[in-house]
Length: 110
Length: 112
Image (cartoon, rainbow over all chains, first blue to last red; front, side):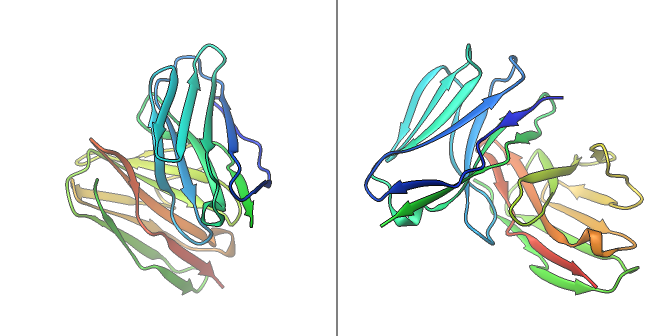
């Protein structure tokens, strides 16, 4: 059974600090990794995807992938109260379906 | 990326009845996925829908309960049949195109 693990939180971070969200996956052959943000009552929205080892930056967001350790993370710099949401890690499976983690609830405290 | 319009946004249904959820995409998507999401939980894949072929269902989900249609590359429906209160959930469709995966706005279903 292919699995994606996330700490469900909640993770509480002061406004302006860096929020670090982590995800591990069980299938060593996985190639594509996604971070989604989901506000309460809304559908998931894509923040970033990453395919290659290393870092990928987009504005305040940085995704980090380490395939050897089967670990993907999302850093949010200068956290804002509007970043408070549930962050979902997903890994693409062999049939293009996404395998989802449980999600981490992030709370940014003003 | 594609924009998906999902209808209805919410409904309250009597047990034993059926509800059909529609997703219309503004551009062609290669694959569509149907999910269920309980409050506070992650997404559970129901099935993958490909044009012109029968949907592929995940373990625990069967075609008689969740029939799916995918007549073309821009439209799909999911029917929740013979509903019971346990079917109360949020149902989401998702499409895959060259820009990645996008989601409909969801259908909040309550079965009474």
